[in-house]
Amino acid sequence: MRLKNKVAIVTGGGVGIGKAYAHGLAKEGAKVVVADIQEAEARKVAADIQQAGGEAMAVAVDVTSVEKTQAMAQTALKAYGRIDILVNNAGLYSALKKKNFMEIDGDEWDRVMAVNVKGLWHCVKAVYPAMKQQGKGKIINISSGTMLSGSPFFLHYVSSKGAVIGFTRALAREVGNDNICVNSIMPGLTISGSNQEGVMTAEQLADRRKRRAIQRDQYPQDLVGTVIFLASDDSDFMTGQAIAVDGGMNMY
Ligand SMILES: NC(=O)c1ccc[n+]([C@@H]2O[C@H](COP(=O)([O-])OP(=O)(O)OC[C@H]3O[C@@H](n4cnc5c(N)ncnc54)[C@H](O)[C@@H]3O)[C@@H](O)[C@H]2O)c1
Image (tube, rainbow, N blue to C red; front, side):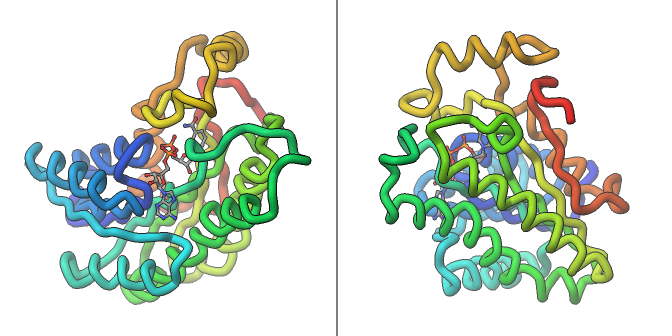
């Protein structure tokens, strides 16, 4: 087990890809704080991890709230005494409808930025004091392959995921001397359980299969190994990086 005695917070861990990250980290021995705005779903994931012999707890969090993200970190510290890993996975994605940029209204744009960009900053601010004090930490920010391909009709979302890369790089430089690694992952289109309706179409799936070097659909499990690697000691000298995990669709 590569993450024995480590404590990991996974935001948006209640459903979709975040749920797979939570299970994967727990299987490697981490104590997992499943943090989600969908509290009932977070509770189910934590219970499933416990039932499988792992350690986990659920925390309700809205990443747009300074108070709630601070409370999330305090709850984790109270329960487990430390925070080693933060997976900034919560995002507005499957809840969004694809539309022409002219049709996106200002409130929706602001909401996407509040969750997908500012939310990461809130979570980092909440866990940083513990990581600094411990002399080590791993922050993994979930971007998206859409920022490489420039997916159309999702301008706010793609812009927010581009911002995640800049955020990752600048933060990595600020916390490097605290021995905190900050990296990001750019997943390809993933059948996550929550994006089947609205966001993802059969045509898009067929298109992605064709454009990948490994020509098949992508599932949450395809991303878990990279998260574990970035959370583990194996990646201790890697920071500020953005890794595409998409079956070789984007090569850059
Ligand atoms: N599925 C894909 O194809 C794909 C591809 C690239 C990147 N991503 C990114 O991966 C992450 C997970 O994707 P998914 O497919 O599981 O999406 P999803 O929409 O199913 O999951 C988003 C998660 O974030 C949570 N969340 C939303 N707003 C929140 C808030 N304010 N506070 C706390 N939690 C909040 C949701 O409850 C949910 O658990 C997202 O950041 C998404 O942008 C997904």
